[in-house]
Image 1 (cartoon, rainbow over the protein chains, first blue to last red):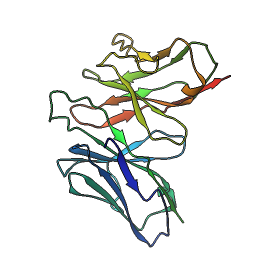
Image 2: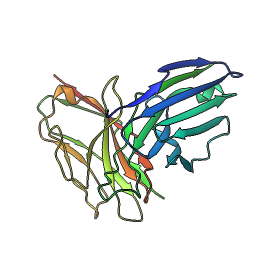
Image 3: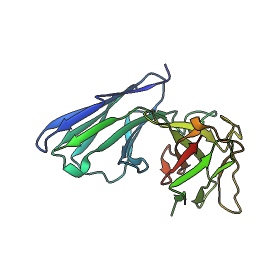
Length: 118
Length: 109
């Protein structure tokens, strides 16, 4: 299985709602990522997890809360979002950079969860 | 500061014409560069990386440290090459990628 699976594909939520985005991979990757992508823009890194520990937080507002319950799963909990948070949220996974002599640096991306905040 | 620049938002060519998508980078260490591609309604995926010096789908890219460039080239464009192409730089010893703004390649019949 060489895919990263994200659910839901589409999500519409109000500014007072609480929702979660989910990501799963079974490639044995120990690094997982959340990226945010606005229309016609490149992906912007939000968070990196390495061995289930948060290693990078790109100064993301606390209304986004990541969680890595195990090496295959990555969640992004959403609370009190703003309309400007509407975007495509991409999950990715990779080998961990410090892990293997054959580290390739390749990130495997999911198809994304398209979020609309009303 | 680390930066990746793709100067062209849109590149439009006819089928069979050569293609060059430009990428310049700014990085203080030894760079590790990638090209990612996003076809319509498909996920972002790796096209090639400079370390492996491979050719994928007829595309090649050579790292030129003197010019700090990593341009993507293909001698004869095909319609199925139409997509968004992102040049990306790996930061340090992390998996963090810094993406350029992307270039949309449009190959006309």
